[in-house]
Length: 420
Image 1 (cartoon, rainbow, N blue to C red):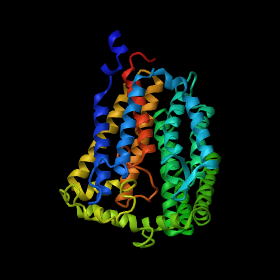
Image 2 (tube, helix red, strand yellow; image 1 turned 60 degrees about the vertical axis):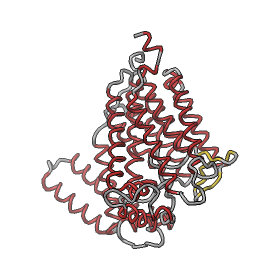
Image 3 (cartoon, helix red, strand yellow; image 1 turned 90 degrees about the horizontal axis):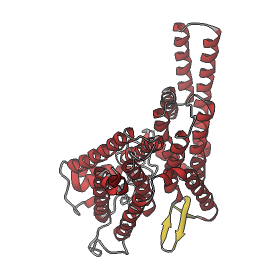
Image 4 (cartoon, rainbow, N blue to C red; image 1 turned 120 degrees about the horizontal axis):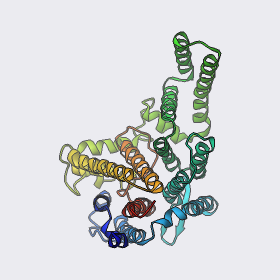
C-alpha cells in the first residue's frame, strides 16, 4: 500500500487516459482532414493549424504529466488562489486583450493566442469543490446557496462582457453539480420551465404565452387547496411569469446583436437564411448527411476539401467526422464520449474526499455541456454559440484547459485512498 501511494502511476485510471489519448489523436487527424489540400500534405507542417495542434498536444501531455507528479492536496489548498488568478486574467483581457471574431477575450503572445475564459472553467470548478468540501456546509442555509452562485456569476459576467456568450453559458452546467450536492430538484424544474417559457415567447409572442399562463393559473386555482398563502404564491408566480415573457422579447430586441437574433430565429424556424446566419449549420448538415452510413473515406470529403463549412476545424469539427467517417464513425465518437462521461461520474462516486468527488461532478458537467452543445450545433438542434468539442477541436487554450480539468481529477482519483 505504501508503495502504491508513493507511485501515482500504479493507481491511475488508465481507461480515462487511453480514451483521452484516442480523442486527442482523432481530433488531430480530423483537423488535418478539415484543412487538407494538395499544397500542404505533411501533417507535421507547423505553418498549418494541424502542425500547431501537434505542438499543443505535445505540451498538453507534458502538462498532464506535471499534474500527475504534483501533490494532490495542492489543488484543494490553492483552489481559491487559482480561482482569483483566473478572475484577474479575465479582467486583464478586457483591458488589454485582442479582439477576435467580435470577442475581446484573447491575449496575443508571440504568434500564439491564449484565451483566459477556457482556464476559468477548471478554476471555477476547483473553487466550487473547495467551498462544498468545507466544514459546516449545510445546503439548506441561505449562504450555502448564494456563495456558489457568486463564484459562478463573477467569471460568467466577465466572459459575457468579452462578448463570448458561448463560454459564459458553460457555467449553467454547474446546476447539475448543485443538484447533486443536495439542492432542491425544484431548481432544475424551474430552469426547465424558464427555458420552455422563453422559447415559447420567442416563437409565438408574449401575448399568447401570457394568456396561456393565465389559463394555467386558473386551472391550478380550481384544483388547489385555496388558502391565503397558496393564493398569494399563485398570483406572485403568475405575475413573475408574465413579467418574464415581456422581458424575454425586450432583452432579445435591445441587447442581442443582429446576427444573434437572426441565429435564434433561424433555429426556431422563423427565418430561412441559408446564405447568412443559417449558412454554417446548413452546410454542416449537408456534409454530415453526405457521409451516409460508412462515410466517403479519410481525406475524401468534398464539403471539407472545398471549404463549404466555415470554422470546420474548430466549432464544426464534428461535421468532418460525419462526412468522412459516416454514421458509423460518428456513432463511435459519440459512444466514446458518453462512456468517457459515465466513467468520470462512476469514479467521482467512489472518491473518499468530498473535494475530489465534487470536482469530479464538475468535470463531467463541463465536458457534457460542451459535448452536447457542440454536436447539437453541427446538426442544427441548438443555436451556434461557438464552443469547442473537448479534446477534438483545434485550439491550444481549449486543449490545455480541458487537459488540466481532466488530469486534476485523474490525480485526485489516483490518490483517493490517501485523501480524506
